[in-house]
Image (cartoon, rainbow, N blue to C red; front, side):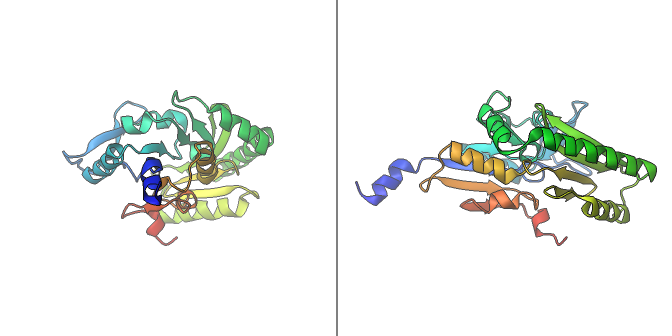
Length: 259
């Protein structure tokens, strides 16, 4: 069998690891175009984000190519399931909660991932660290009346990350910089700060999109004859994207903006 015949026979898998928010859909300020489609809903069941014509076309290209699409999102499981795009929610796997959780095709915690986490990380120790930091930050921002809400996100029994959001009434540029600077100064070793506007996430070492993507690549035996696309917009997406064959980045991505 010639090299080209081998390539043709085996090169039948296209993997797409894709971020969601601001990549395949986005919230819309102002008038919603008639060509946009609702892609997620909020807690009230009303449309929260929309896919543009271009985003729809991109996803359709992947679908028609029989790509194995794997969402990679900072959204926790419940928020991920608010997505209304079947090609995203009806997948074999989904990486959620900034990479701390991998879901199977029934939207349950993947057994193999749970075993991996228990073997590689002390989840109880990190739970304790996150609770301690949660209490510290909650007290600090309450005392200074900063309009910052702090939450500990637990997904499928795993303490995944701390979520901080500045309320709209307080969220001017100066306040965002102040909060960012304080969090960076108090960030414990081995934790990572992900900032996006008035939203912040403090991530333990197992909440890394790249760790989860690498795990699934190994589990699915992604090899040299497979093709891997990676799509994303933020700095936290770059680590898993850089190990792909092709990177797809939206024009207005955070990646292109100077910090």
